[in-house]
Image 1 (cartoon, rainbow, N blue to C red):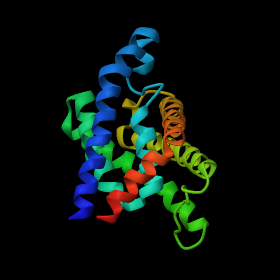
Image 2 (cartoon, helix red, strand yellow):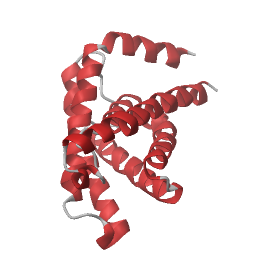
Image 3 (tube, one colour):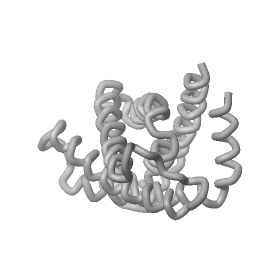
Length: 188
């Protein structure tokens, strides 16, 4: 029951970030940048940053919230539930592959000790973001073939990196409050 409540809370948190992305960031980008450039991939993709931080800190426990909030967010953005589901599965798998690799390389699938060293969280988040963005672009290109825009991997990479750096900056700034909130949720 605790995991369900925790995933619902994470789901709603990520959904709020998706709403901010679709209602604020996307329109702002379309106004400031070439609309065709940001139509497929945002230059500041905040949901990627939140998903990376949550996945790095929480591991598999957060996978359901990440998957279903991404389906909802993509559906909110595209109005296409089938595409949103395909993209969300690709995005979630792409996110967890580098996390599993990093944990394996650290020996025994250990997590990142983010309570002691915020630079460890930052470094891990950046590495996960770079690998996940490239995997996401690769899998999307394989799935959608020639219909995927040229250079999509670069757009995914830039948007995901800028989104992650922004979110990591906020997490580092407010980390004490965030850790207390997570600790309370995990104790229940």
